[in-house]
Image (cartoon, rainbow, N blue to C red):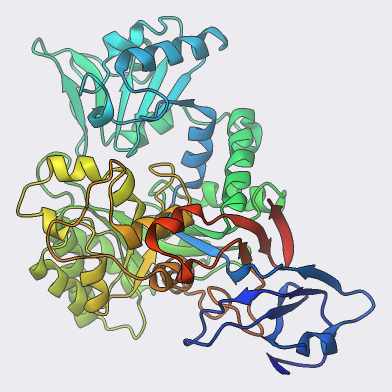
Length: 527
């Protein structure tokens, strides 16, 4: 008989006959977990659980399945995911051509009241038969009586029809915004394709007065997003929207309090709004176990061909929140952006040292050896998206410069350099499916079956990939003391898998399924 716990209270719930992967310091698998008041009471092997059995204790026979900490999606966009789930699905699997997209949008327009927005999401021109972005001319064929917005799967581009362009005030003489591009045809007319203009579009089609709670379509989308996350074993999400302000904080807080969102939320603050959070008495870590304030999100973009903001401006933007004690999260995709982010973190720490700033680099898609060296010396952790190499790897290999291909999403190199890693889906850019992401991190194979790595192998073991999706995410959110592993006193956020990924061959990882999800010891999803 063996058990590890605290106190002598009886358990509320006992999960027995399991293979327990605690993710605690290479601890061997246990066979049972006891929960009391939403937290782990004890875990162990043998029949030690019987000592914790009381008259009101509920029991779950796990039938030999694998119990592990709930998954942490360390980078997603909650409200964008909710919105995408209510939009017309224009991903490659649903619409392989511009003409098919137009047909799908026409059907939705026919069921939409005149004048209301029609939304589509998830298209990727690389996977369309025409090999190009749709344009306003295409979308005008779907509807002339509705403003129409079609979002690229990355969220960094959108296409509007003529009515949509009119609704957001974009005309021939409209100048490009500082960080965005209005694509134009040879005559100078907008084609309808907009790059890096999500903020303007968001303001033009904002929810009605009262916010999310008064927007039925978005509220329905939140319900769908919640159901999707629970079914995939996700028990915590880090919302990484740069538009997050106090109003959004309150809206998402209301959603959790109202029972619309089971997963816990770590919400980043947009860089433009961090001072309003400070004035409200909030800093990184403020909140409670249900919802906490995370990092200040700073976006580095090369959409115009030049890095914006530049190095000096970035130092100016980040000095205030760093000195005030906030964690920083740098959106950095290209190697130039990753280098400047790492340099900025190093500069801030050298000038105003903080013992555990735990600043983050989000994405880190291109990471040359020289870049990797800077990331390592900066002390930053990297929140990456392993699933992108599988879902979009063929596009990356086709469009990325040859010298950069060996250095795309170099998970192995980052681990060997002792860079702390966490994983996120970037949903709705990709499905928030951590098990498929684990497969991608191990296999490094594209959706079309091609090897993604063209140089040094960058895959990892299933155990390391699982850790990146659980304990790694908890660490990225300063939550390793309460979640991310199974240990006495920690929150009972758990996922039961029908197989143990650490015992499977690579291709068999695709067959693992979630059998049960628990948040705070409460079952929120069962297969």
